[in-house]
Image 1 (cartoon, protein in one colour):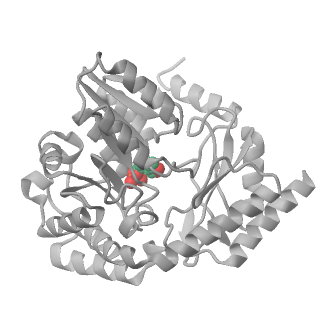
Image 2 (cartoon, helix red, strand yellow; image 1 turned 180 degrees about the vertical axis):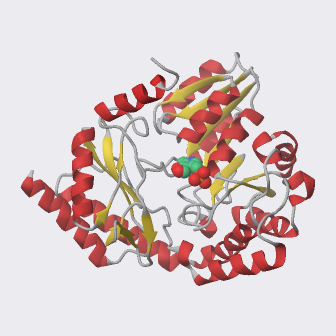
Image 3 (cartoon, rainbow, N blue to C red; image 1 turned 135 degrees about the horizontal axis):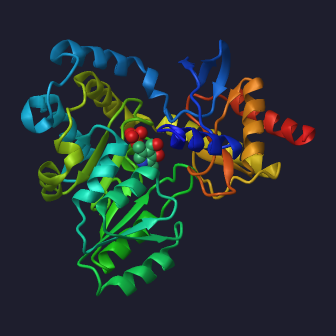
Length: 385
Ligand SMILES: Cc1ncc(COP(=O)(O)O)c(C=O)c1O
């Protein structure tokens, strides 16, 4: 026993259960492809759903902003990091999402982890969908209030908890993702709004995987709807990095005053704001790319279902192929890699026990040939197993 034993023990335990994670070195290429270990392959893991991360306008504006403002923003927003480009971007985000205000965060993880503690007190109940992302789970833990998980997308269960808890808490907050990151199914935002209003609860929606992809102006399923706080990320379909929270003006003022993850951190680099600015300009007009994304996804889902693969309730560009056993999911992912397809395994604790899966992320950059290749490989896998 030495001071490192807990580390070696934990790693060993993960390894024995086929749950050890490791990093892969990837070289980005365009057109939905990447290079791994010197080999070109089709990438079905990227969250760059619209292909914006390599768009010329994003790169150009990133350079322009860096030239004008410098490489770093030099301080937190409340000190002297509030460069005027932040104000302009936030005004545009508010307008696009149909809210009075918006505020930029340094990442989606940072937003979730700090927003929830800022809006809770010991008399608060957080009602959280059982499949919410780890950042929401960590934010809920840091809130140090009661958390009632409700069954995934089960509005009756949620309403039951809302009814029973009314007398015991002074504040209740419903938190959900709009498109679920591991399952690719969607929350019923309109019904959640109705429940939040009926029971006077705040509604917080994480649009990480819907920003750019769905809803009015392509700004998510709660875009221009009566949701109290909408968190969206710039790290996925927007093709850059960072996040935002849209809300009414009072809530925005509250975040500026009480949210530690906003207050005590240096503002994002100006170049990143430049890339976001360009993406936000492009996204409302990208219906053609969104249609292609949905068509690619529907074709893949249909093909997989016809072969009898379990894709859960996916209805979007995130398509889980649920295998169950960790070792088998790893074997399939390694075989796909040998056959020039990058499709990562997601295992517990990222997904529930017994639900290890290959999570396929389709992008608008994929072509029919890419989808055909993947379907052919899944067919072959069945034949050889
Ligand atoms: C649902 C959800 N929320 C938040 C995040 C964190 O966002 P970011 O990558 O910008 O930190 C992710 C990222 O994986 C996510 O899937």
